[in-house]
Amino acid sequence: MEPLIETINSFLWGEFLWVLIIAIGFFLNVRLLFLPLRKIGYAFRQLWASRKTAGVSGISPMATLMVSLSATVGTGNIAGVAIAIGVGGPGALFWMWLSALLGMATKYSESVCAVHFREKNAKEQYVGGPMYYIRNGMGPRWMWLAVLFAVFGALAGFGIGNAVQAHSVAESLNVAFGIDKGWSALVMTVTIAMVLLGGLRGIARMATALVPFMSFFYLIAGLVVIGANLPQVPDALSLVIESAFTGTAASGGFAGAAVALAIEQGIARGVFSNEAGLGSAPIAHAAAESNSAVEQGCVAMLGTFIDTLVICTITGLAIVVTGVWDGSAKGTAMSQAAFSSVLPFGGQIVALSLSLFAFTTILGWSYYGERCAEFLFKHEVALFYRCLWVAVIPIGALMSLDLVWDIADILNGLMAIPNVIALFALSGLVVRLTREHFNGG
Image 1 (cartoon, rainbow, N blue to C red):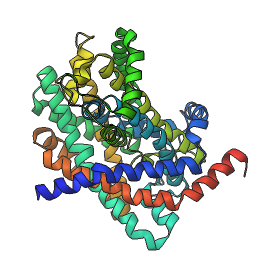
Image 2 (image 1 turned 120 degrees about the vertical axis):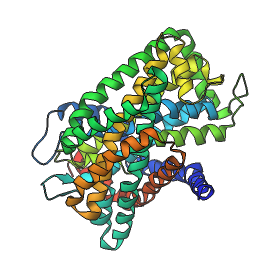
Image 3 (image 1 turned 45 degrees about the horizontal axis):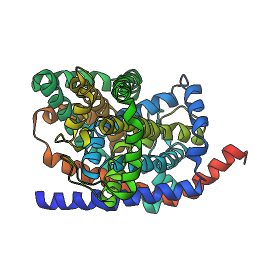
Image 4 (image 1 turned 90 degrees about the vertical axis):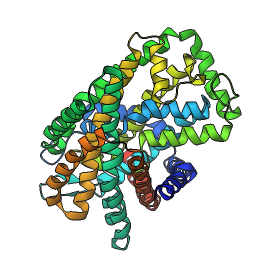
């Protein structure tokens, strides 16, 4: 089965998915008159104003953003950026920026639909996401498409959102600090089990505490690296923009890359990092205690901005200004080399950041998977799903997961297809709701 799985994975994540996701992002930007660029200030004001808004049936919009970021800010921001630059050259960073700018409209539209078509479950909690806006927005005859999304989401979480993340935490802590993988598995299992007992509110509290801290910690370290190489920043930015359109010549340990490879790597890794178009983030944003789908959509699009245009940019610039991009280091090791060139414990800082990012990803994706399972089997499945989720953590931490990663990638990618179809079908509604909100009808 392995050759077949690899073939399917290569097809999905080779060109098909990123072209599909970028196309819907461009389409939505045009229909919304490039709203993300026009309303970025408004979005930040809404985020700040809503930070303490919460009620019986939901959590604050800021907390939902933290839950969303907890699932997206992860290995893609450290290893993914390094892989994109290592394969596609510095120009790949420019195409990551483009994927984020287009993806902000996608994330906005996803969350507008999620809030507009959400429901309340047996516990009077808001639930929503692509499976709900497909069923409630496109009609009963599209129920099969909603079921497909929910099946892919419930299963994909165990791989990309659980096992491979637990493995990343155990592996990075073992390499950087010599911590036995068994102890890492035990601590993760117990800690996550305790958080999941609190449901979404428990996840939101943990995410609200950890996500700002870990992001700030990583960004400060990255800015120190960039600051120490400040004279090289203009040349680095020039290299990023120039090589995005001309390709990158072979130099040092870099084999060279054409423009097409820079585009493919930059956009594909950008999409993988911020998940715009995959349909995962709107599951969290649907739970927000917000009366306005448009306001919540504006808060949601900040997730893509923070994930890619801020955190990925820090990683990418650190790699380019330090010159490690054309060395022998690859993946996470490249990011570690960049930080270690300036900071005494740079490698350990990257390893700790990666561990925290992956840990919160496990929490965020547990909610996504549980909501998909609930859509399929009603609320009674929640406790069973949480127990199964916790049981997979030590397995993932202690096993080799190459095949699991490939299968999870396929399921994760398949989530995007029903979601993109729904976004195209419901784009007119998104435009109408947006106009009514900003123009008073």
